[in-house]
Length: 524
Image (cartoon, rainbow, N blue to C red):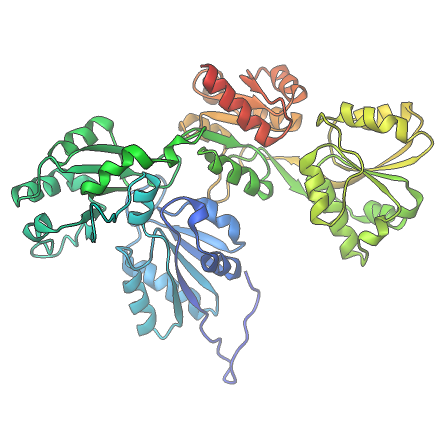
């Protein structure tokens, strides 16, 4: 958050800008580029309960959840209170993002918030979002319009203001409407909506469906003839948020459904990496149809002192090889080199070695290519490839504060002069740490049935997961929750702690772990 704001000639802080941003319906990839830009500029983010918290990775702002319905551990906020919070933050000169599910002006009360801001003299902008109707239909394989079936779409609220004296929904008109009907927020009134439509003349056998948690890996779709839809939904136990779609276009689902066909669709996978490193892993999980559950077990911090690193940077001309065994090591060392006034020209004389492709990719971000990347992504393989190349050579290893010492032992035995420099700290997440928004304590995630699998991507992560587990969470491992390890070394560390590993990756990456889960599920 910004420390200070410019003042006008009278010494007053001019109001900040409020952005009313549509977050889309659930898939974090559906956020618009403009919405992401606003989040990156924000000082404060007030986000709806239906917003996917993975979107908060785009901002460093203070984020606060606003609930207008019952939620565990959350106080209900009335709309007027939300309006006043927006106004108060803006009057401090802050840039405020009001992050709203779907589109701000489609059944989202964004227009009410805009009116309150205008009345208070607060500048604002509206950033449209993908509304739930289009996303729900398309992610369920249903085209809301089709030249053979529907030339019009009606968006209808299934949850009107309870203070209204009578409903504004004209069911006789909707029964005659020659197009697709989409009801928002109508799950709790499904039976009344269906009976009103059928009584008004809508065909009882018309194709219809309810889509729950649209565009997320927890999406579920129930189809049935209109009159039978309430019973089918009750039997399936669908939950809000849901949309009701009615029309001939629903029949298209049987031929063009795509989203629910992904190989890990609906599987909830715990991502145990440090929060700063979860973005690519979470995106990969989403691409496969899985639900990433952020549950960090370690955290990455700068070294206690940069002085030893600075000394090594000054002595880079003395070395022949530079080794990296993590992307953190790459970014920490090269970031510090840049901060100290240097750049990649300081490495022009060095040969570069990386433990695997993700570390090599981190080098590529700095426009550097690795000279050695072993085919097997572990320390033993890297040592074996380097051993014949480093006899009599000086090798620098940019490493974490803790980890295995296979590399220096093996390379010194091969005649190399190896020096280690700690460029970042690999620290435990303390058991009483309060998670950031969108993250979960591992034990809580397991006990609350939020995960099906947990990925272990290093021995230290395996050991720290063990330290964080409650007895109740531990009992679920191997039965309701499975563990997948990135390598045999990590699997061995987990099993030494008594953690049962169900699958081990053959390619030692997160992608390899996801493939191991797919193969395990295919065998089951």
